[in-house]
Image 1 (cartoon, rainbow, N blue to C red):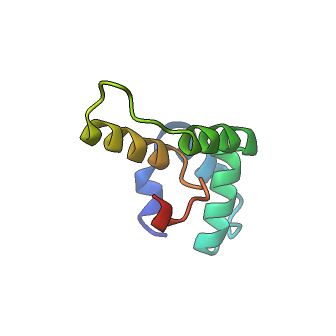
Image 2 (cartoon, rainbow, N blue to C red; image 1 turned 90 degrees about the vertical axis):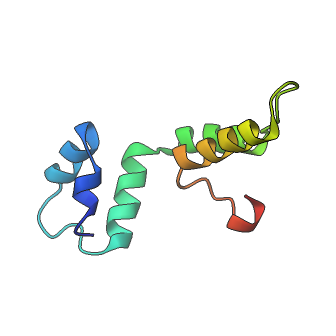
Image 3 (spheres, one colour; image 1 turned 60 degrees about the vertical axis):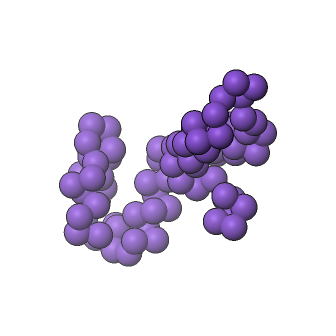
Length: 86
C-alpha cells in the first residue's frame, strides 16, 4: 500500500488525497473504493461485453489480437473473468 500513491496521477491522485484519514486501512478498502470511483458498474458492464465478444480481425495476426485482448483486460481490472479463461 505504500507504493500505490506513486502509481497515480491526475484525478486518481486527487481522489486518493481527498479520502479522510484512516478511511483506507487495508488493501481491500483501497481496491473497493478505487474501483467503485473509477470503474462504475456501467463502465464495467460495457468492458465485460467487449471482452466476452472479443474476436480476432480477419487480417489481424494472432499476436496482435492477443495483445489487443490483454489490453482490454488491463483497462478493466475488475472484469470478473478468471485467469484460466484469459
